[in-house]
Image (cartoon, rainbow, N blue to C red; front, side, top):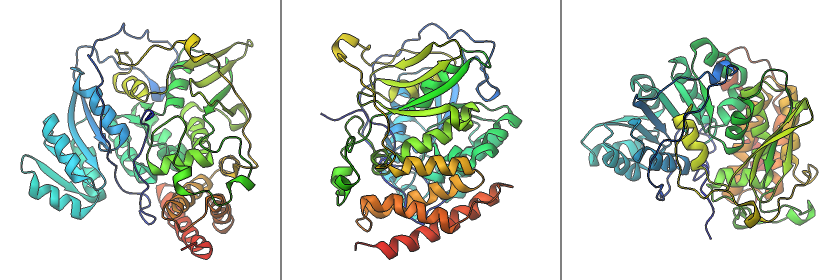
Length: 441
């Protein structure tokens, strides 16, 4: 049985770096839209999550990466939401589904990162404007007059649109974790300066956002992210020698695109999520943890100062956090089953094996080092994962390439966004050289 769809539908090209697009998938029926009771607005909400009351007002929405699984599920929600007005769509190169989406939803402006795809779209679709390349994507963000941008792009290519969105003071529903992994404090400081909200879409960060917003400062001792453990949970490092791409893509819980599925198999996904959570919630790394939870029912926990712990539970379905982000601060009905704990039967948890899954350890080390180290980590991971998917690198080689890249490209201070672009380029060059040295092809 196919699992719930989650994030991307493929890995970006090795040389793409900090600029790009999205991927394609087929939507499922969402159900009938009805509004739940409005959320009670808590007096303590962090500045980047400050609530805006949208009741009775159509919110203008721009979706970046609309042909990917997050984007297509967001469109399901938009289709039955009278309070959301779609003003633009973008994709990497999937021009045919993008044009079909524009026609279906009456959108008059789209952007494609790939120039050839944009040219084909412009020939086939004369009902609106087709923008081209990273510059076209930026134009779409800046000129859309959107109230909310959903950034569902894959990889570090999402950083530029995130910066453009927040720089314009536009609220951001963020599914692109790399924006915060790479951009870090520069991104959150930009949000604070312009007053734009950052509302996380990742299921774990959405869960933490909901748990944290009800608590006063100083009451939270620790944040805990859960991980399914991926397809290789319980395996030793020796067991992972020679695993195939097909085996690594068999995620036990989520049906996702190639890049994020491999990140889940290596547990790099959890490392990136720790860095994202650090920036979203201003929590020190020594007060965050990851625990393996195979059932994927508990999405996150917070431990409080009085010894109590709060958990966010629900069946794994990305439509829930997407709807939360698009409608925040209100909730709406989503056609997903209510959790039946008796039917689930048991919830189990176990520690992470960081000896076998070295990517999580490498992510923690890069996060602790700070500066451009997380940017280097992310770039090296994107190159290594792409090489693995292309059959040019073994599974265990992913962590080896990342570790060697972190050694070759020393971390430096982040003085401006230019520092990140330089570190990203240097890391991609180093990682590509390391892959060539280890190439299986």
